[in-house]
Length: 504
Ligand SMILES: Cc1cc2nc3c(=O)[nH]c(=O)nc-3n(C[C@H](O)[C@H](O)[C@H](O)COP(=O)(O)OP(=O)(O)OC[C@H]3O[C@@H](n4cnc5c(N)ncnc54)[C@H](O)[C@@H]3O)c2cc1C
Figure 1 (cartoon, rainbow, N blue to C red):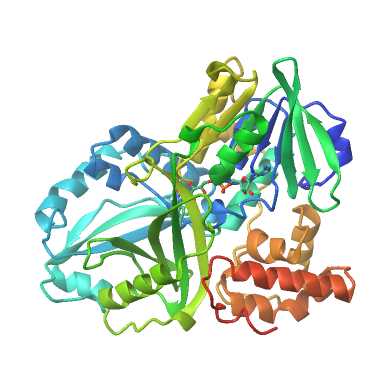
Figure 2: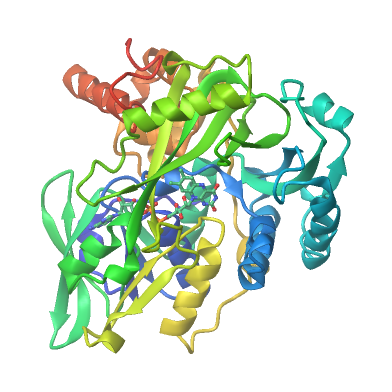
């Protein structure tokens, strides 16, 4: 299998068909869609691949149940199609997520509504399992009795409980593995990808794009990369990048909503993911992540100047209070927080989440020819949106099918249980291969973004001595790398250290 190489000088001497700026899920899906069309793309990511918003989501590959409520059939069908894409083509990294919502017959959350709503959802998603392997099939939804609801979720609040509803979604069981598998697939097909290279300027010839100036954040050197097309896929930074390249486009990200998920040092409350409503009516999602308790996603509108990746202390306190109220006896405290996963998503002027990605052809807006920007709203539909974007830019390029693309490719998956430890040479070999093949520049790349080791911080820190020999760094460099890892494990956490991240 081909390696992801950081060969900046060589790439600067090549001519690419397009340069994608931003290596989150949108950047990687654009890369995949580009090679599917026989194009030669280059990806530039200023930090590590998928280390920002795309690291911090709730890992749910959404079907469209929620879009039925607003009768948004277009989004509903897009989600069904893309959920199938994940389950069909990347079964190693995806799973079936049974979800349960207890019903108290309040508002629309009543058994009578879902006795109709769930069959409608199943009918409109009739093709959800087409050519998906049987073990990844999503069963139809159902309304449950009170007794069955209690059986599935023993600590449910039984006061006025009428029953529950169950539906099935997809989830990314190994999201780091999925990203790197998709990236390696694109690289096998001719793409190049550079982490720790920041796009610092657009190169133009007359009024047309001819490339991007990239700064290697490791060496500080600048390089000119050549291509007639540039796509800015910088997520929450897409307006900044548009500003650097040409000018700011406010509609790329009208308002900014900070939201975050928290991994608690507790066992999951049920084998099912739980949708539970607070007294104020906010629905929290409890994802049984590798058997642990991952809860999201409180939200807050933020100004650009506010620290974007830090969950506000007061909001975090409210969040923990809410959860303790919803599940009595849970008694969560700050010290139970293992990781905080924050991110910023685009919102509308009224504060609601933006429902659709924003796409800008800069030339059509009076700007430079060959420059495009996209800002997306979900990782679930990132592949489809990328397909649409490239379909518009490279109208005459025919794409091969994913069946064809994946039939000859080798996909490698290292699924790691929550308590997995490298014991013995074979396990160390796995990590060694990742370091060699997957552009691991820092220790934190390996722990947080090539494997799921960092999703269990105490374990991640405990194994450091075992993996020290895999890096040929001197002690000073090693200590710096450990400090960087600790810092990243604490990212998003307000004022206090997550458990396990404090002791070396
Ligand atoms: C808490 C939370 C929960 C979520 N849950 C779900 C969910 O369950 N299901 C779902 O489908 N979606 C979910 N989402 C939404 C989803 O995560 C995002 O829509 C998606 O990850 C956005 O990807 P992106 O590539 O646009 O942005 P990012 O992942 O942020 O990628 C942008 C990249 O651009 C890079 N960059 C910026 N400037 C430059 C530059 N000058 N040069 C080079 N690189 C640059 C950044 O470093 C970054 O890596 C959730 C989001 C959040 C925050």
